[in-house]
Length: 294
Length: 87
Image 1 (cartoon, one colour):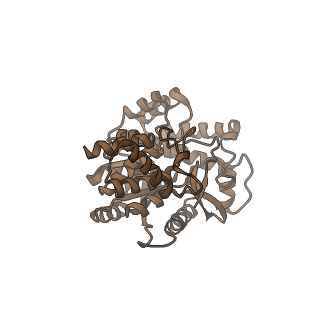
Image 2 (cartoon, rainbow over the protein chains, first blue to last red):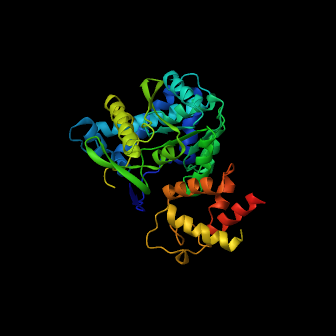
Image 3 (cartoon, rainbow over the protein chains, first blue to last red):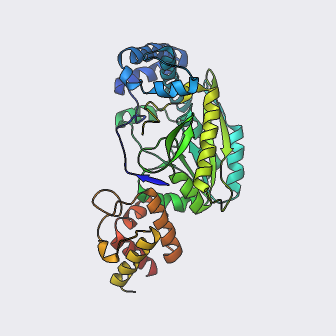
């Protein structure tokens, strides 16, 4: 396992558009999703034509997944930006109690329930794919404490604007800091559920894996945590199957106990499942930076 | 066990569990922060190794996020937490 303190300014996932941009979209959502989508078409076009610097890194990903040259700007980049916007609007509508957006999480719920029965803790690994935030809603239904490792990186004003519509109890957010991992470890040892993304390496230890035919860095903390605690690792990916309809798929990627190459084996499975999903839904991967340049 | 004795033992434990080859207990400042700049510069995997060591050797478990932050501030604070547990 390699150690790196490298960190660069990268795309953070923070919402763009500011308070008023989000306010206008949320007002439109009260009328319905389609009017919000209509405005989104123009916003996505604006970003592709005039703020292309924010999106141009996605060319690298699109060339790998579509296996052809992509120019900047181009229709695939527009489609990716539009899909990202749609997932953001769907998330806001879903958490705002809209009945338009539906999620079928039966398959992943069954797998997670089965894993929880073992009382050894479960790590849910997600990725910035499709409607990952929508998928998180079902985690509260298992009746056990859920913690999420991540950052609360939205502006306070925007968070209040969105949370004003929130019908779900927010999960317990553990900041991505070493001190928090003691708590995460203890939570898993008590048989709790811990969720985190595993597709975006920022700093710390990493492993290289062959992702879309090129080496890329992936964080390894989740796998090390599973090895130490004996927790199961369930990878959950949530994609938009059709307009307003999301579906989760889940994979148990826990290597056998005592496996000598535990972290690498789990990572290989994680990357393989992500590739399989993205080949079917290439415009639902939302990492707008050069993933392979690190 | 005296606090100073425990700190000395913890320094040895940290060196052993993190494989800090070439580091002697005297090189470790017990009041230096374990993580981040200006301290030992440990990372998340190191934190995990320390957690396992503290649990196995000192039966130290934690249920609250703020307790974790206090405990992991430095080797001194680790010693204080262990002593508080034994009282």
